[in-house]
Amino acid sequence: MAKVLILGGGFGGVVAAKRLAEQLGDEHQITLVSRSRQFVFYPALVRLAFDKCERDDVSFDLRQSMLHRKVNFIEAEVARIDPFERIVTIAHGEVQGKLRYDYLIFALGRRLATERIKGFYEHAHHLLNVDKAIKFGKAVNRLHEGRAVFGQCPDAHLPVPVYESAFALARLLEENGKRESVGITVVSPTTLESELGDLGAAAALKKALDEQ
Image 1 (spheres, rainbow, N blue to C red):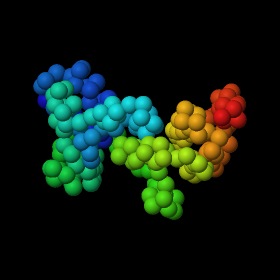
Image 2 (spheres, rainbow, N blue to C red):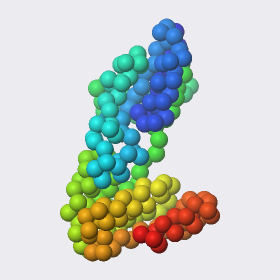
Image 3 (tube, rainbow, N blue to C red):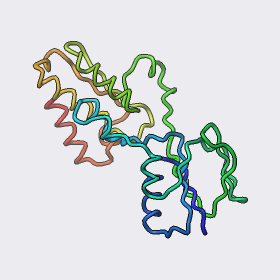
């Protein structure tokens, strides 16, 4: 029997667990470790904020999902990896200690360095989790005049939600008859061409921004 250990409950980890469960026999053991039992489909958080879907549409319980696929689930944080002994130490969760493995999939993803932006958590709305997306949605529904600023952080690599949110707000204000009372500004540390990596896409986006 082979022990397959998957670290990370995001897209990479969940897809790996699903595919392996489909392809490997019951004689092998698959374990998924994630710091949270809630999987969040982050691309849908803009839709959630603008009331185009429900909370249950963007999040589901990993433990229950993995149970259906005969994958063991452990809610904990990864503290240390020893590739020579093939041991992962986990902590701060329902189980603490060492997990042995034959095969390891590392899918912990990136950590967002939001602390680099002073005042971010104190004064800005954001779409980094389900609750904040819902709070953001309530805030834009109360917006009747003034200016909304959408910011792209330095060294960020995913500009799409910034522009998607700006366009969604423009549509909402238009529907509510408030578009002329609210200015919308997108702030970016770089050019559209650099962000998108494609001159044609950058030109199309600029045209859409100008039209809105």
